[in-house]
Length: 126
Image 1: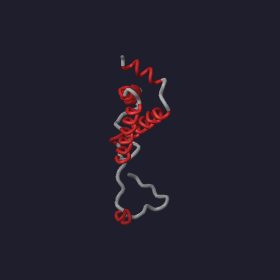
Image 2 (image 1 turned 135 degrees about the horizontal axis):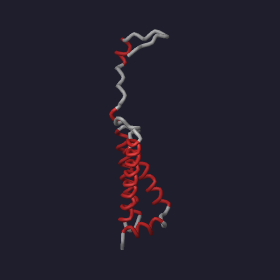
Image 3 (image 1 turned 120 degrees about the vertical axis):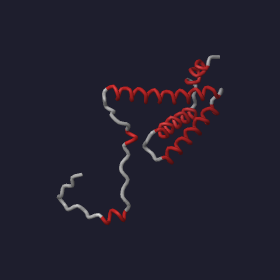
Image 4 (image 1 turned 180 degrees about the horizontal axis):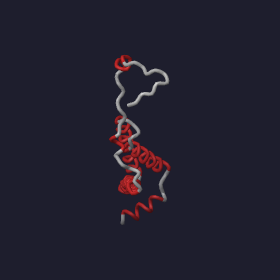
């Protein structure tokens, strides 16, 4: 049978556990590829996404329908990111890559204490 027909048939018969696993997968996947958390948080989110995807594939019979749902979710996120990037470039909203503009690291505490504090009301020109 055609896998897309199977996928359409199973979408209408998903149980609560399967819906929760799909939801956890999508949220964890978005967290893993996003830049909000540090590397360790993204790694944990990726492991959670992989576990949720595996759980989804195990709970759906046949397992290939679960794999198709996971692939469709990943592809949908990719298409959404591609569309938003293309639109932002088309209107000129993006000049540089945001990931390259990391904030400057703070000086160690000993160096900050050694520097004199600016006087109140003084304007510092950098």
